[in-house]
Amino acid sequence: MLLKGVTASELLQTLEQIPLSVGAEFVTQKLKERGHFLVIISDSYTLATKHLKEKLNFDWTIANELLIVDGFWRAMDVNIKKGYTKGRDI
Image (cartoon, rainbow, N blue to C red; front, top):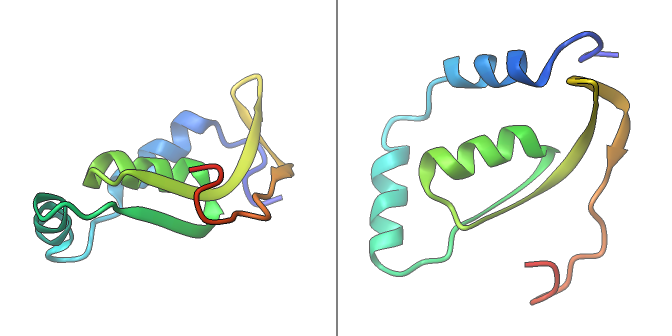
């Protein structure tokens, strides 16, 4: 298991160290100023997408959810989001 023994806190610290692409903050700011609704859709995990959502002021994120037990990821327990339709779950 890739995340076995890794805490949510440790993973968040790692995410903080990954630089954004040049211009990402500028582009998202301009899109928001023009009234766009920004969404991250990913086959990654919610911890990463929620981190980016907050960092870049996105409106919503859809991703797979790893379950946390006693502060540690249980990589085998993943809630996979399926069946999204327009207007539902958002």
